[in-house]
Amino acid sequence: MIEVYTDAASQGNPGPSAIGIFIKAGQDYIEEHQLIGKYSNHEAEFIAVIKALNICQERFPNEIISCRTDAKVVVDTVEKNYTKNEIFQPYLYQINELSNSFPYFFMKWIPEKQNKHADNLARKALQANR
Image 1 (tube, rainbow, N blue to C red):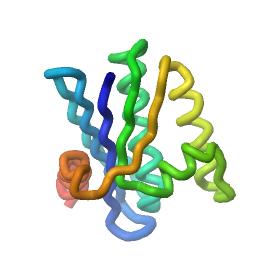
Image 2 (spheres, helix red, strand yellow):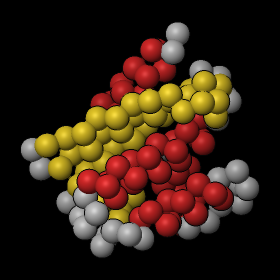
Image 3 (cartoon, helix red, strand yellow):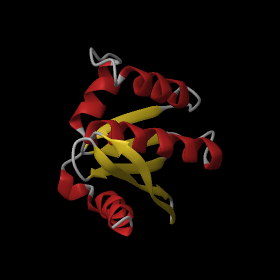
Image 4 (cartoon, rainbow, N blue to C red):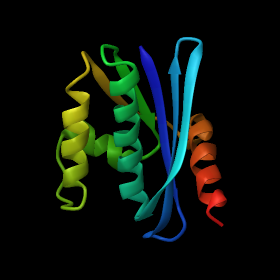
């Protein structure tokens, strides 16, 4: 099973945004952080999950994916497979498309304190923009 941790950071809402991704595959790990443009924090959280799933599709196409985030809005949207928010709908569609390519995909909410690594990566990318 591949453990995926995602987070986002924004300066302003919307504002310059960055994502952080930490992927654990056994003893190996992947770290990703990048600026993504001007988004709301919620949008950036969705984009972090999408980017993480793209990486997993490339590197671990036949693995079970356990995605963890402290973004409750993302977890709730994916678990319910529904959102009234028109801005979030394309993100949900992309997550569904990507996650369907894996044998199993789990989305789990975790407290911020358990997501520090991904948070630090997102903040690192955002600070590099200053």
